[in-house]
Length: 251
Length: 295
Image (cartoon, rainbow over all chains, first blue to last red):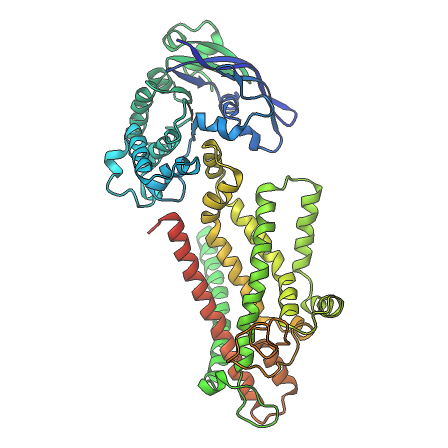
């Protein structure tokens, strides 16, 4: 398997504070990588740096390289709007636009130049099907996205991210605000989606990390403490700190 | 005192204050309506005022107030929205933006008479706009600007950060995010701010005495070419608004029915503000629903 996304000595600073301290991490194509670690360990910051989302925070800056193929997307002069189409993102709290279900999905493709109504209809249906939401909403595409339940909203957000055809999907604790049924739907979905996507997921839920991911990266105080195949990380971690966190003794 | 008793006493006091305020409001409103309503008829609303004889109306003043509102909003809304969006979405927090914010705050606490005199010196005389609707609209813009800027900034800031990030993550430009994602969500607050600003246009008298003037030239309501001197739409003619008229009739009116005219005009002014409020709210809700497809 090839690595679709690689970071090299990636550092993120908030003002003087170094939140992410030089991470080298590879994301294999069509795999799920779980980023775990106690609160404040820099895993979310690291995830957000991958699609340059930290650019929007006034005193944040990041150094190092982020490679997609042979392109360094952290290099100055990178067109972030083009880059961000390749990297979809889903947040902890569902954040659908204050628009209809249809418009939530069609908005991105429309903006990027697709005007043909049939083509948009196709993208909307396909994205919603991929997010396992189509059957629940196909009869009310014109109603407000805010009328959906929390779990449905989150799947809508995944569908929205898929609508611009990304090759990488970043999930920032996508199920932590959802009930167990919705959570298991999201987890099934992640397993489905990795057929065609490379996924990075931040999670506080160890069982979830063990269930959905192929690789696990354990972050501690801004550094990458340990990285490996998930089944090995969870059964036989090399570092005692990892062992303690995974077994729930702190964090 | 036991906590439960204290709670009851506090609730009682708060309810009393609330009722007290409502009573004052209803009392004033009732007084104005009772005194004024009987004087309002079609003739009163459409005919020009009389200086000496009785039976004068408030037609031109009513029109002036509405037209001044439109002119002021045409200037205020784009400026206020622009500056507010800049403060919320583009300005970096530094000394310059802090200063801008301070200036905006200070501007909002200027006494209206001072702003009126400033308007007389600068807009009426130096710019040579004379006593005119345009001068009045510009002075009222000075009043309304702080409110519009602050309300717009707060409205945009109140939209959750994730909404904006969702747009960014899909590769949308900042401008597209502002216009298509943030603006519809911010709209209800902006509409409320606009209503408050408009209320000021209806009610302001002191600043308009020196800028829009205290007289209305003979205007012909059958000539709608804004370039003609006698056209109601000419923005460079003097225009006495309803609020100014009420003040003038009350303080120096010599028509025998001056008091009745003032009372009737006051009632009309209050009713107009009320109608405008309801209309603006309805429009705001309709737009919000259209943008967000919330039923």
